[in-house]
Every structure is written in C-alpha cells, then in structure tokens.
Length: 400
Ligand SMILES: [Fe+2]
Image (cartoon, rainbow, N blue to C red; front, side, top):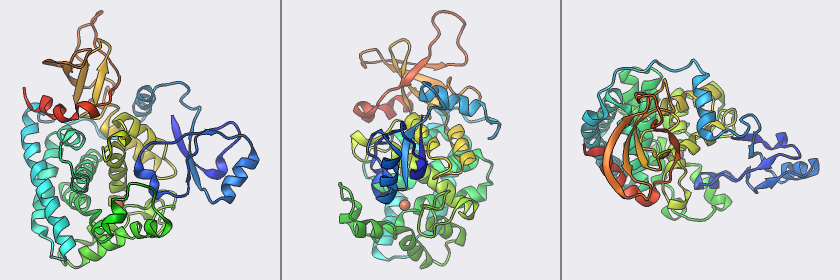
C-alpha cells in the first residue's frame, strides 16, 4: 500500500512513488520523483526546496494485494451501517438512468446560468437532488455504476453529477436524513460552479499550471460562493460546502486552511467524492485509475487529506470492488460488479459478460456468496482495465 506523508517524515530507504492522474498537478508541494530516498541530506534538500508531502510505499500491508488489504481494513472496522433491504439492481437501474440523464441536463443548465450570470433554477436543483436521493435509497449501486460507466463525454457536467451521486450514496450510508441528503446533492451539483469564472484556457490546459494559473484555479470555491450568493434561496449550508470542498484534514487545503472538524461535514463528504471521481475518471484515458486502486490511494491519504475514520467509512461504503468495476475471474472470464456486499466485500454479485479473449458471451449473473461448495467456485482475481471496452459495458448492465 502507499501512504501520503509529510516530507519531514521521509527516511533513507523509503520508496517515493508517483501516483498517476492529473489530480496532483494543482499540488506543487507534492514531491513525486519516484525512487529510493538515499540519505537524510536528500530529505533536508527536499524540505529546503519547499516540498511538503510525498507518497511512499509502506510496510504495514507487506505484500498484500490492494484487494486483500482493503478487505482487512473493512472487516476490521465496526463502523458503518448494517446493510439494508434494497430494490434489486435489475429493477432499480432503469429509473436511476432516467434520474442520471435528467441530472445531466440540469447540470448543463446550471453551468450555463452561471456562465451567463443568470439566476439559478433552484427549485429544479432540489427536484434533481431529490431524485438522486430516491435512487440512493432504492439501490445505491445503480448510482455508483452509472458514475463509473456512463458515456457522457463532457467531464464538467459528468463530474458535477458524479460528485452529487457519490456524496449522496455516502451520506445515505452514514445515516443522514433525507432532507440533509437533498441539500448534500445540491452542494455536489454546484461544488465546482466557480470554475466557470476561471478562464477556460487555464481549466483545460493539458500541462502543468504556472504559479499564477494555479492561484487562479484555487479561487474557484470563492467564485462559486459569489455565484450562489446572487441566488437568495440557496441555503448557507450549501454555500459553505462549496466554499470549503478543497480544505484538507491537516489544514493544507484552501481557501481558508481549515482543519479537522472545523471543515463543514458536507464539505468533507464532497471532498471524498470529488477526489474519488477525479481519480477514476477518464479525462484522458491513460490517467484513469481503477476504482479499487483509487480507494487504496485515498486510504494512503488518511491523516493528511482525509479524516482516517471517514475515509475508512467511505471505502466501506463503496466496497473493495465498487459497483461498475470490470473484473477478471479465476475462470479467465470477465465480469461486471453490479451489487456490492458490505458483509463479504470480496464477494459481490457479478454479471459474467466476456470470455478469456474478451469476446462477448451470453451473460450470466452470479452471487459470489451463494455458490455451491466445490472445485468450480468462481472468484475475482483482480480489477481489469475497462477503458478499451467502456463504450459497451453499461449495455451489459441494463439488459436482462
Ligand atoms: Fe473544486
């Protein structure tokens, strides 16, 4: 496993690793030159250069795979709610798809309104968030699946809705009331509206940002609040969540440098959902990280970026193989995870969709917890990279 640590905690012999993804380009203080730290002098030099944090490999998990380590982490914790009765995935997915598509249309609308300085249609925001909450209560896996596999290309809108959906799923998992969940969903949809004020050439710049460009990006939470404050009906709780969604547990975030529980709860949840979606999104295909790897990285960011208990809960909520994960089986076949199992996180419900050569086959659903004893037991070996097959994966889950 890897862990993010303060730069002063680096020791000779530790291995610095480079974590893929563009999420880090706004973190100029992250040292990410991969390799073994040779001496105390080298650490002192990095401190002097102004680096503050680095990802390192840790011994605590030994040679365990990410899956096994996360499984131990989840089964060792007493936190989180007992699983509840849900509408079966096959019944719930159709209405969640309608909800998701409507939400996408609304996301486009609010981004346009923000760009043009128009008043938000807050009543529709509430209606959209309420529908997302209904889906989360009915079957949260349907939302997590769509957040991973939907085929909308524009990251700006998709990210708004994904953050809303994942935040609401997590909020529901930790027992928030429906009224709170609706406001959390609204905050998720609106969390990055301030980016409409930042010049597009900066937002869409493929390479690393310059210092002034980075500063401009870091103003987007404030810009977002300015936009929302023009709309008198938007509750202060939503505005505060937008304002503080880039604060960090150790106080290293922005804009206020708040730490720990001084960061509003909604903002802490948005932050978890924001990072998870940014890590697992295909903004450019080579950079997307598999869901289980992303959760491993986020666990490595505990104590620095996230409250350790809260990130543990988040992992427990999404599972080791989050819904929508494309996995390789011990039979050589490939399957999609469509329902997680918080009691037995290594054994979700899967739909087998491809043979060893990735040719489509007649699909078959298997509940990995309900297999007969014997030689033919099916197990998940690992997450497989779905990027090349992404276009078709959602279709496998929507037809019976
Ligand atoms: Fe943001």
